[in-house]
Every structure is written in structure tokens, then in C-alpha cells.
Amino acid sequence: MIPTIETITALEILDSRGFPTVRVTVALDDGSVGTASIPSGASTGENEATELRDGDATRYGGKGVLQAVENVTGEIAAALEGMDATEQAAIDLAMIELDGTENKSRLGANAILGVSQAVARAAAQSCGLPLYAYLGGVGARHLPIPMMNVINGGKHADSSLDFQEFMIFPLGAPTFAEALRYGSETFQALKKILHAKGYATSVGDEGGFAPQLKGGNEEACELIVAAIEKAGYVPGQDIAICLDPAATSFYEDGKYRLTRSRQGDKTAAEMVELYQSWVNEYPIVSIEDGHAENDWAGFAQMTAALGGSIQIVADDLVVTNPKFIARAIEEKAANAALIKLNQIGTVSETIDAIHLCRKAGWGFVISHRSGETEDSFMADFAVAMGGGQIKTGSVCRSERIAKYNRLLEIEAELGSAARFGA
Ligand code: PGA
Ligand code: ZN
Image (tube, rainbow, N blue to C red; front, side):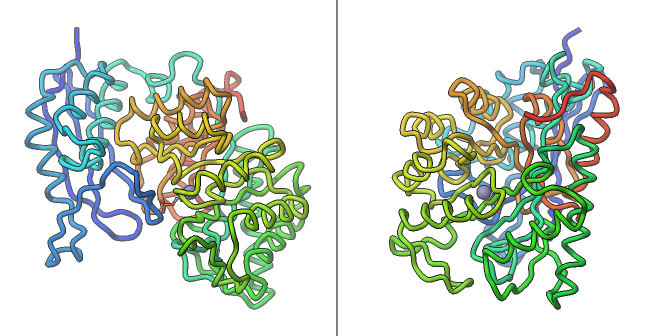
């Protein structure tokens, strides 16, 4: 029997920052149901698919999503009802065509992705499969290494840090569960170190600490190394460091302005030198968005200088869009891509983006957004896509932990069939 879409409903809910977002529920004629809630970024790339907001200043400061909800329950539902729910690509394409714009601005990427993900969930249930197995097939048994953002700066916190994310990466752990334990213990050790130094231990949007460090960006790396050691691990061997400076957020008038840390203005080449010196000093294995979203030359310079030894991840530069990923591959602007479902707006286009990365020998990192919900779709999606790496925040705040807990469940369910790491 073909499981067809019977009803599609939607609701305006709140994300982890307390801003409205879209939740979609898809019901099939065989009784299967799938629900998905959509996250939202703060340091968004200018070429991302459009998140539709009402702009009505009398509700949520203009951030309401009632129009997106209406688009789901009206136009999209009318177009998709009766379709075979297992035909994900056809369903996504029908929505892309119905929208008719380049970046999904008419119906909203939040509306379209909500339906796309909810359809996948409902179809998985109809097939009697967990989501990771439905999307990834019998080979979906590789758990990703988590990049855990333990110190927040930039647009995610009012800290003294220009750089947005300082992450720990337990690459030496034997299993995902152990990796999570390494990360949690290091996070707790870091808390004690910060406290002893008189720094605040309150957290930013992604659950990392957001202290006013006197030594700026470098001190963040020093403290993380100290925390790794205090927790009993070997920096670089058990746990490495990954950075996401999110450089677009401090790029102004052709200069990288390290204002918060009082390190002055830098050119693209000087940023490469700075990163090089940090890579020499600290166990850094990955740098994402070291340059601004339109600085293709800076990215290429960075990849030429450091791409042989560490991972250079493009996020805002390529926005999970196969068109930009293809250009970045061509121009050797990075050697890995960040993958965010809501940057492109459908499940099948996201899979296309990952396919391109694989073909080019690039790495890929499945990522959350700074504004998240309790939805753990991306955890299943990471396993379905063959593991690799996942970036889903620190080891606190339930909207982050929901993804980690789901990965623990998947690893336990797979038992001895589970594999860990890239
Ligand atoms: P965002 O940040 O979700 O606020 O865009 C995440 C990132 O830059 O990777
Ligand atoms: Zn980023």
C-alpha cells in the first residue's frame, strides 16, 4: 500500500531564544504521523534560504511566523495532499516549484523545511523504520564525532570574544557515548577553572560559557587546553579544538576588526597568519568561517596555507547550497562544508549538498542553529548521512542535549553494529 499524505497542520511555537518558529505535523492515510520543528540562526549568511517572518511589529517584535504557518496549512497542504510520502525528492520539488523563487522567500524556507522534515518522519514511521535507517538505509550505522561549543562569543553572547565558537572535539574516544562523556567532563572542568579565576560561568545561546576574558580569544584556547588536562585527557590526542570565528560578524569596511579582544584591525592575509600561529600553539584541527562570507580570496588563501593540515569549513560562504559548494570546490576555498538543513530549506537539497562534498573528498559537518528546538531530526540525519561530524552546541541546555541524547539512543539501538567517527 502506498502511504499517502492525508493532512498537514502547523503551529507557531517558540525556539530556545524565545522567538517564534514553525512546527509542522504531517499525517498519512495509514495512521503514521511525523512532526518537525524548525531552528533559526543569528549569524545567518546573506545567501541562505529565506525564513519568512510576519513583520507585524505588534506581535513578537515582527518575528511572528503566522504567515508561514498559513502557507503550510493552505497552499502547501493543498498541493501535497494525496502524494506518496516516501517520494521525498518529488515532494520537495513540488514545494520548490510552488514557491517559485530562488531562495524560498514566497512560502518561506521555515514553512517548506517543516513539511519536508515532517514528511520524512511520517514516511519512516509508515515503513516501520527509525528515521536514520529510513533516510540512510542499512549502511547507516556511523555515529558522528561531536563538536561541542564550550565557549561562546560573537553574536551568540555578550562576552569579550570576537570569535563566535570555541569547540572541543573528542576525536580519540572509542564510541559516541564515550565522546559525550569526555566532552561533559571537560565542560565541567572548564566551569571550575573559570570560577576559580573569578570569571562568570553563565552560558550563551549555544550553552557554552560566555566570560569576559582579560586575554581575549587566545585565553579561550588556553583555558580549554587547561580544562582538557584537568579532566584527565590529552589535548590533541583525546580531545582537540575546533573554532568557528564566524568572521562575517566582525568584518567591516574590508577589514577584520577584532574589537572586543582589542587585537586591532587585520587584513585577510593577517587573519591567515593569526590562525597559523594558533594552530602552531594549540591542538586546533578545524576552523570554520575564518573569513567573511564574500571573501572568497581569503578563504582560498586560508585553504592554501592550512588546508593540508587542518579542516577548513565553509558555512556562510556556501550556505548548504550546492551552487556555492560547487564554486568553493572549484576555487579550493575550503575542504569541508557546514550543513544546515534550514540554510537550503529541503531534506533532498541538503542531501544533494552532502553528495557534492563526498564527491570532492570534502568533509561535512551536520549543524544545528543558535536558535533551536527540542527536535532531534539532525541527529538521525547525521547518522543517515554516514556520521562524520556533528555540531550541536555545548553539553548543557536541553535543546542541545536533545540531539546528543538521541545519538546515545541510536548508538545503543545499533549495539555492536555501531561505528564511531569519520
Ligand atoms: P547561527 O550560528 O545558527 O547563529 O547562524 C551557527 C554558525 O555560525 O555555525
Ligand atoms: Zn558557522
